[in-house]
Length: 410
Ligand code: ADP
Ligand code: ASP
Ligand code: MG
Image 1 (cartoon, helix red, strand yellow):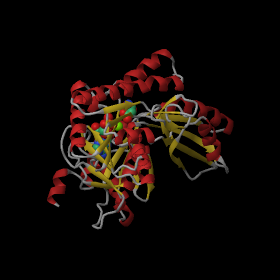
Image 2: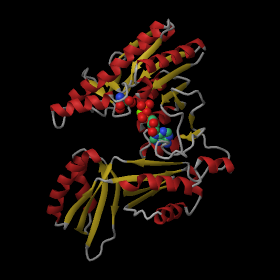
Image 3: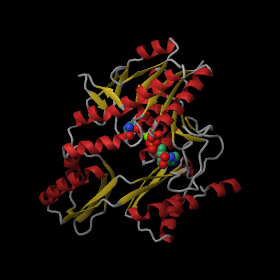
Image 4: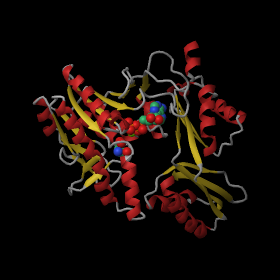
């Protein structure tokens, strides 16, 4: 008998029939002899709908109240799924995050899990029940409801799998696995049988929202076997593996992109020691995370300084930067929130030269201007104009031999 955590995302529980479909899948797993913990998201669109309501009440909604509001989405689906399971004679019990004590820190709307009380869940499992837990939510020491950031149900599932030492954590979604890139943007994308944990971590952090980054970090830390599968179609899905394969890895395994960033530039900053700190210090004090950073070598004692932040922080960062620029005697502050970051990822890049030049050549042939570049051992990211997103990703997908048809011929 194995212990499996199954997580069903928003589309998978998007309407009553789909919830009944999930109930049938869960029952089938129970009948095959496994113990099942189910984590569910809110019905698709519900978290956005609630966010929209909040913004009609307050320009920047109070984050504690936001969590009280957002957590209702998942509370609806746990109870409905439990009813659907009872209806087909499968014993089940639903719990909110605070009822099973998913203890988090105090950072409302992006809390981190600190501990999970596994006892109650284990007790129900031992009594032959399916345990259904609301994804995306927890409770802090003070008893306030917290949420884990968008896409956070993935993290709930992996954290439960780690806490209960599950044999596998299965993430059921609306695609049948992890693809070489988002199949909604590149129809030629192919499903991967396996992806290394390291690559999945990069893909998630660079914008592939098929798994929330924290869930992948959690899986890495606790060595949770993780698989992405479809709720609607049978199949093996994609296994996130901890071993690098024996055969030579493809140079580029996948392409990720992120539409959520904006870039800011301070021009003609006096080039003196400490400018990075002077510019980024106030930004980080305002709790704004910075992603890519570029500082040019100074000419005539001045330099330009560019960095990217999340789009939601763009206005605030611009405001802060204007103050800083004035104080530093810089020329001006400019910004652009119509950009995307496109990244190629692959552990095979470690042992191959020339990958970057293939990427740049591809963009050059398509007439796509590159604004920023950053590299690490297993990824190269560039910032380009958002209107070139699809063209750029498709061109790279072909250039690195990832298109489905090409792969079959190899
Ligand atoms: P859920 O609601 O089930 O959590 P998400 O929308 O969060 O589903 O994640 C699934 C979506 O992730 C897919 O519909 C797909 O558009 C997108 N996606 C982005 N990159 C990839 C990728 N590399 N492989 C598969 N899906 C991807
Ligand atoms: N319902 C939340 C969201 O839409 C959490 C999740 O689906 O994982 O972000
Ligand atoms: Mg998701």
